[in-house]
Length: 267
Image 1 (cartoon, rainbow, N blue to C red):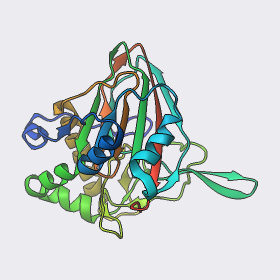
Image 2: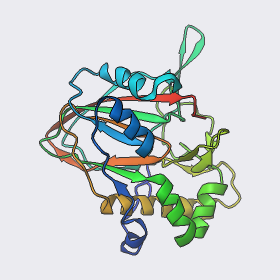
Image 3: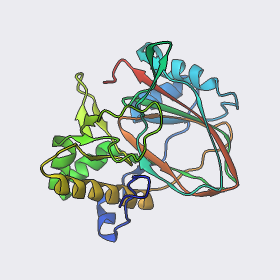
Image 4: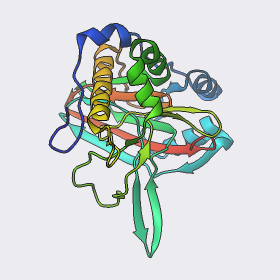
């Protein structure tokens, strides 16, 4: 169901819990060279004792991804007080600005790695959830073949339900599939709160129903998945093409800093 701002929030459905009950993961904790090996093996790692300097995100990106780094985007603060639950999603934004007549991209919809540094955890709540998108797609292949066919075979307007888009967000539809592969064969599994059928899609109602079913699957998966707490100094690095993520509601103040990047394996 879509809210007043166009954002689609799913509904927890008990009949889906058998399907999605084992898809949440808790990342391993590792430091130094071991962290890089864990990231390569699992696609996610928490590096503890990383301090409170946001620039450590850049250092960690270089250390863990090495020569694969292609493009880094600006570090952004995520501070909040008494926030509601953040649903399962994948990172990526289409933000372009004009600087002295030149188009400059501040965010990219195909960012493939996400780094988050916790500098102050919430007093209560705010635990994180990671969902293995690859395992989800394979589960849907068998249990929900029509939904799987839609996610892998039909285009959507990725930000199409955004009401009154923010400045810097192009109005041109961003047409893509929720699950697709890079030219190098890497699979990307996506989740967008604002996805809509592409303009003038003849099967609009059918596609909208699939998007709503997908939102329900993700909401149910988040409800079932084991959550984990990020403490001060924890730095989470994850494969943004594989893992979908969200967090619980929280009370008090919570502070994180976030960096997204693109590697040579990205679209």
